[in-house]
Structure formats: structure tokens, C-alpha cells
Length: 250
Image (cartoon, rainbow, N blue to C red):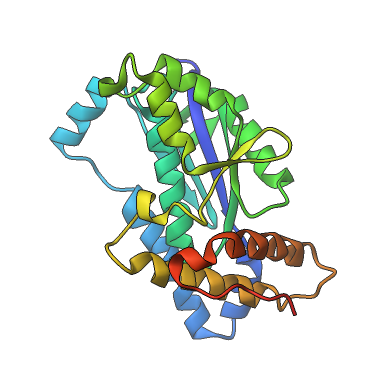
């Protein structure tokens, strides 16, 4: 017993309180919340069969996932082979699942000492991820560049000796912030991370466009409005790639 060294992601749904308030008098909103949280649970929290357990054992993996109300917490052992790629892929899938249900999110990924088994979790890594998410002003899931250093020590089984290739592959769908941190670029990564076939990215990003347009109807002095202004600017950089119109600020 004792702490493991784990990589942990803490992800929070934006606008959840407002959504819950609306659901008190709007059955459609109630169903939207229920469907969203059920989809998250069904995808991330499910029993593993023998072959999945054996695959985890060979990779040195122990993935623990907890969903509490509007928060999703994912943690993996730092020594899992290819674990950083899988962690970022899980976070990206969560982001896009939420977009498909009309929500943006924000979150943070950190690593360090942590105990996590089923619904019991504690430790400095969790505290760091929680506080970093709470402090973040943008609708992003962010992480330090140190995450790429972990890849050098624990690449995927087929990438030993090709760690730089794996890092570059992961970085393809990440963007650098001014403070030196990175975030998952959900404005461009749908085809690579989720991808449902030809034409689906345009449908998906049209949903993202709707979310941003609705968000820009918020009072301009609110902190939430600033999040959607940032999202609008990012969306407009790649809208034409998906045959979508730019979002104009009213």
C-alpha cells in the first residue's frame, strides 16, 4: 500500500449549474443532462473482459476513472507504456462527447503522488489537477510540457527507440499557450481523435459553432462571455476547413 505516481486529468463541464437551474422547469434540459452524464459513464466506466485485463497487465497499466456530477477524473500509472497518448486520447474523446451534447469543458492534467482505486482517491497530483482546473479561465484541457518527458521514458511498446516520433505524433493535436503550457486543440483534432467517417467532422464542428454562438449571447461583462470570445477566435481559424462560416461577434 502507499502512493503511486500517477498522471491524473480533472475535467469539469462548463455552464453546468446554469443547465441544472434550467432543468428544474425544462424537461428537455433535464434529459440533456441525464443523457450526457450517462454517455460519459457508459464510455469510460465499464467492466473489462479477460483480454483487456491482460493487455493492461502487459503495458503496466492501471486506469482508474471516477465521474461525480459534472466532473470526470481519469488517472493512470505514470509507467504505463504509451500511457500519455492514451490519457490525451481519453480527454479528447470526453471533450468531443460533451460538444456533441452541447457543452464545452475545462480541465487540467498533472502527475505526482496519488492513490486512486475505484471511488477512493487522494494525493498531491489530484489536488494539483483540481486547483489548476479551477484556476483556468479558458475552455481548454491543459497540461505542462513535462508530460512529453514521460513519453521518453514510457513510450508505446512499438515506439521504443522512436520516442521523438511518438512525441511529435501526440503534439500534432496540441497547441502551445503563451505561458508555456499546452492544451488539446479540439478545434482541429476530431478526425484524428474520434472521426466517424467522411463528412462527420463538419457535422460535429457545426455543433461546436452553435455552442459558441449561444455562448456569445451571454452578458459581455461576464467571465463566461470571455471564454466564448476566445473559442470564437479559435474556431474561425479553421472553420473553412470544414465548410463552415466564421462566427461574427455581434
